[in-house]
Amino acid sequence: MNSNEIEIHKELKKYFGFSQFKGLQEQVITSILGKTNTFVIMPTGGGKSLCYQLPALIQDGTAIVVSPLIALMKNQVDAIRSLSSENGIAHVLNSSLTKTEIAQVKKDISSGLTKLLYVAPESLTKEEYVAFLQSVPISFVAIDEAHCISEWGHDFRPEYRNLRTIIKQLGKVPIIGLTATATPKVQEDILKNLDMSDANTFKASFNRPNLYYEVRTKTKSIESDIIRFIKQHKGKSGIIYCLSRKKVESIAEVLQVNGISAVPYHAGLDAKTRAKHQDMFLMEDVDVVVATIAFGMGIDKPDVRFVIHHDIPKSLESYYQETGRAGRDGGEGHCLAYYSYKDVEKLEKFMSGKPVAEQEIGFALLQEVVAYAETSMSRRKFLLHYFGEEFDSETGEGADMDDNVRNPKNKIEAKEQVVK
Ligand code: ADP
Ligand code: MG
Image 1 (cartoon, rainbow, N blue to C red):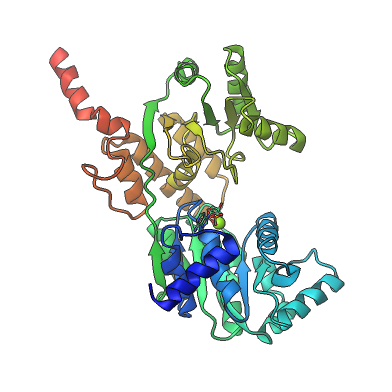
Image 2: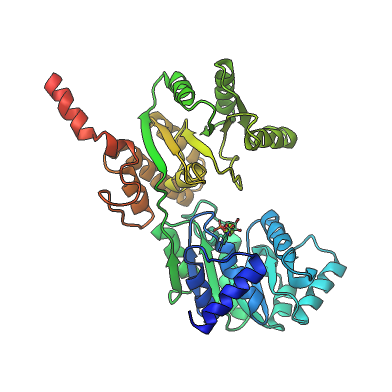
């Protein structure tokens, strides 16, 4: 270790209490400290926040962190404040602040106390704020959830498209973009829109070797099939995703009638019921949550043993995120998706009301899901290839963890022909 490395290890311990960096964190931090544009692609839970928090804390000036969700920003600010005795070390700048609060934020930034300033993209466009930020030293700008800049991402936010113009007005400051979206298309969009083709890029592997991937044809007996599956995983925690609220309710009921402890979760339930059902799942008062995609954001239950998709998801990106909630502890995680072409047509019909450009993207993403469901190759290889990652299906970690590898389709077909 050279003196710089020793230094950042010491700071890691001092601020966060960790004795080791996770994955590529150290390389990323070194890149940021070198004042170079940096692009970080790491799966959810990979430890992206620390990549900008640590360099912000140890450098002069204030780092601006752009993030799309106010709740997320507040959490992070609270977490940073708890690491320090100074409240002013981190602030959020948004439209909900009073004049007095804004004055305090500006004072703390001007005095050099504030190391991290979280802003929503729409606040950053305000002229008043831009003028102020031009007058103070900025260490770098971090753009979290950078996929929001791309229409090919799962969460496009038009305000993200203005970021580059505003950052340019702040002078020569390095940019760090971070995302858990690994598709090459989204990555290209990010680099292009942020005008940082020169960025040092760090991409972690998206392989989840402990997850088992399986696709079953959806038939009329899907409900009894799911019940049988759950009974084979008795007492284990699992999530079942459905497309509609109505389906969530009916599946939850069918499970209950069959003696499986299950609760529904969707945006149509009131906040109190949703919170209650989520807690019941986390506290293991119930085994199964039947949910729409509204469930799971920020859920960190380490021992989810299965994720079932009753209906196919709208993109492989969502599929990866949703199945990623299984096996966080490194233990078993069975990811089972039911597939029928009728569902594809249903999703296409949903999309037909949308603007043409959005429709085209939607169809293209859906076609990838169809290809995944119908493929006879290693599902892991297929998924990782979609994320721009080469996977060796002979020797890669988790290579035998899917239905196609365990029961190759061509063999089954060959056998059927012999029987005929
Ligand atoms: P991401 O934004 O990539 O989804 P987070 O930044 O939220 O991930 O971090 C995920 C978890 O990893 C957090 O609980 C964080 O405290 C933890 N973490 C981050 N870096 C380290 C580290 N070096 N050692 C141990 N835990 C870490
Ligand atoms: Mg994050």
